[in-house]
Length: 159
Length: 173
Image (cartoon, rainbow over the protein chains, first blue to last red):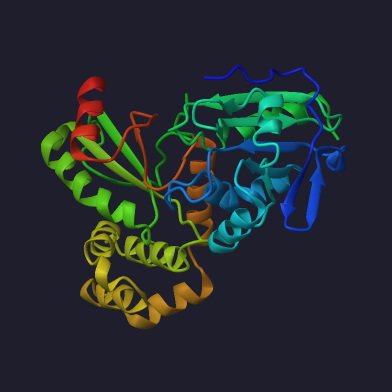
């Protein structure tokens, strides 16, 4: 498993495509907590799918003021079809060209397979990593760790 | 490690002896095909461990992909109010090919529940607070898809085939 960036590290900025004509940068979210969810691929089986699960839980992330960004090496067209099919209500970012460059900058790229790790980062309002976790690739990590981190972060420095 | 939060509650749906050494909790969605497949495996596990096991079910409807998951959960709660939660639970999973509003009505009728009562509860989403509370407890417990199982409060990260569930249960006895 890769060595992912640890809490306390400044989160590397990036600009990635969300749709065929819309890029998103991490710095656009400064002032809000951000959840970065790297995942291996679109189109894994429906009910156990991590992104479909986070889509259901999205109101809980929003209630805590956080924005969720999914990232994989799939291209924008693939993301668009996947998001439409699963009714996803949050952006999927395409770490497509150069392939996996953002994942590599977070230590969340699997060289052998050429996909992202199943790695989670909670980034604070100032752009520093508050919590990070790399799950075994076959295990969907759920959302308990993310929610715990968001609550600890708020307790430490209330908005 | 992801653990069941909160632990077993008085309003949980449970079958099996209250003092059983093993508590198996499932977070499930009645419209989920994997949950339906897991149901037959859970029945085998219940037979195998008999009085050593109690089984509990909490709702985890994936409403964005399964439009009838929430109404099915409501129907199970309506049956539960009549003391028939498990009959509805089993009926929903064991009649997968007929899954839909007419199945909810047919099962309710078999259980002696008036169509008007079921329809009114579905329209009012009468049991939404209980279903939502189950869902949120699943989120906090690290539910990572449906079905997700907990064995004595610890998330089971293997599959739901009988051998995998039974093996993990043996290991915690």
